[in-house]
Length: 220
Length: 420
Ligand code: SF4
Ligand code: SF4
Image 1 (cartoon, rainbow over the protein chains, first blue to last red):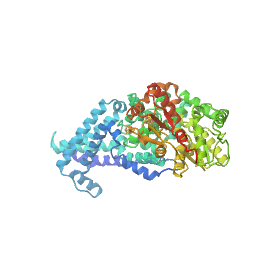
Image 2: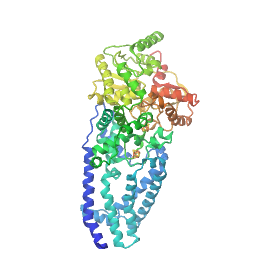
Image 3: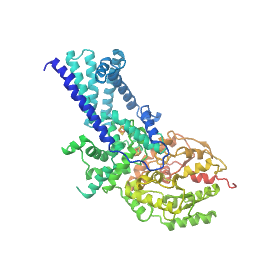
Image 4: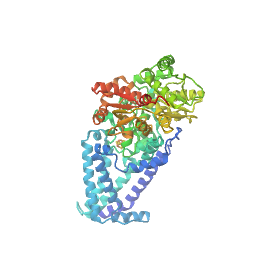
């Protein structure tokens, strides 16, 4: 298989396989979670489950109270930076939007590529710092297992390969683009079966947290 | 597989629902929960990170309730829950967690880690790995009716004393009273002033109340140890007594987990809603205040603060009521740096106080409270939980801090206007 054939494989069958696993995996994971169900609360309520749940879904998007922020400053700041960076790079880069438009039928305006590039660089730096933090902080070292490092790798790989491909670094552009797409496919395949799933399940988790707490009259 | 292990695994399986599955699916191993937990901040031991305490439950969720986990289990690749794991986790879920709920407030993905630990206790207790102190307290609760072994004659003796000293009556088994008061054994034995305070306040407020001779104990060891069947039995006793006496409202006293047990977990444990209300004493007093039935005289000029008992505030929803009440008599009230729903635990709740070997850890955990107190220089601390109160008394002495800790209800009683 030469470069061109490799590229067309990752763009064609490779991408299709990854998409099927990605979508089916997410549906299975959400299904097996939600189908477990949950008993209704029989205690007399002091607040609403629904609105408190929704409130917590939104509230935990924002920075926490000042003291909590002070205690976990690095985790919070680095977390915001790389999540925002990832979002911008994935969803506001013109070629990506074109691809999405191909799949779902509509698109949206893109940011100039130099700006996306800057976000990419910042995200890369944040992810490197996050790895360093994970390797040195005693709590994080205690919590981390192979999955945490694998997930880190499959998250940074598309960013790095995309950056290299965009700047025509690191080998033939065709090959770099193929590797970039392959790295995204790797991310998609692992997504439903690792902690990357938090992208979706955190909405459920926050809702339940807010509902449990809100039922008792406490905003969480 | 031994019978006890099987029971433990079965109990864990019963704890998995869509909320637990969402929580485990969402954890990103960020470590923020550690910084929210007194047992981590004061020891610096990473093993005490809140989410770590849920590992047995996580393994059951993963290997039994996820497709990939079941696949891995079939191939022998999934991590197992065995006797060793459950025994190793005993000190993590009991000695090193007061169920304070603080971790659940900071987790960025929204995990209610406290609830997950509460559920993990069910499996560990079912497998026979609960701490001796808690097993003893639970047995005494079932057979005698009180975790401290307090029997009815002891209560009657205290009531007699109070009636003699004050000339007021403490009603026992009065059918049709509006309120039925529950008491913790600690209040009966160590803080009977609480009963006296209630008698005085309710008399002035013109409210009828009673204590049931069949169910006066408010605490619920079944909740602390994490055995739902026993917890339900203890709740049912209160329900039967309340129905028998036809009261409108059952009052949970100044005890944290008692309120959690009877107010929030109770109906779910027995599987049906109550036909009476349950209120914390502070909620009742705040209602009296609002209705103008609580007239106080005299002010406290000393600098005061309020310690939020976790199960009453963050986990229970009673946060504004104590502040409304304190404002009635305090001239110089200050909040701790983090308070209300973000308050720090005193370190003794969730059953920790009943575990002998956890003594030192409990004292160490108090250091966070100490640093909060050091920041505000108060002359007295007001609170509303006997377990907190014991922990404060012991720890303040240990750390050579000469600050009294007083009950909010009792302080209100002291300020009750004599001529209404
Ligand atoms: S704070 Fe939440 S996401 Fe972070 S490690 Fe703890 S449980 Fe997991
Ligand atoms: S509930 Fe409180 S004591 Fe228990 S793990 Fe969470 S923060 Fe720590």
